[in-house]
Length: 269
Ligand SMILES: [Zn+2]
Image (cartoon, rainbow, N blue to C red; front, side, top):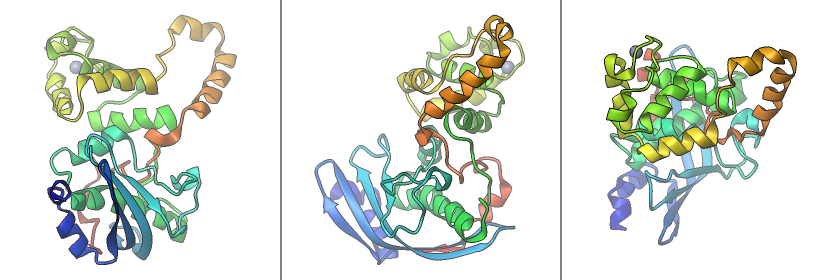
């Protein structure tokens, strides 16, 4: 229990009396019960709703992220609502979530910063027809947009360059082309300081693996010009094959840059 208490479990349970420990294993804990959210984003509707949730938190958290499941079956289990067929939520890209939690990963922080925002966005979509903050595309495009916003750059090429740089030691990455578009080597541009902040979020190996697993390398311009029509089609069908699991979250889209965000939460219990 000591381990879980270090994540603020006791405090979390006392603030959410409808939630109980459902299972306690060596490698995880499962919480289950009624979860109340009352929240409003400026310019959007009030959400006041009770959910029936199950949350499985791995012992390796925050390295491994929790799974949150809508046991009450309020949220349609479809991609459109960022919910898998087993009722678990697509809470956003692993990298975005780790970045949000890197200074505080208590259970309360996880709920306030990740789960509440998800529930608010999806409930708003169900009750009022729209996602209050827009949503990211699924798959690779969503990741590129998400990371571009975090890194302060835009376009897939820039994002790939940033991930590549983060996968190498600083000294080596300084020799690479800067992702910011300045045309210099990273080591000669102040953007290297911006990028260096993200080294705290994940290890170099994680960035290397992620780049390999989640992104197709950019096509060389030669190939593109040779068969524009068919290449476009090919890309579409390939993108459908990529699982949406990494990027489709509707709530994080504007988390980093939206000032309204600070007055998001009224109350949650
Ligand atoms: Zn630069």
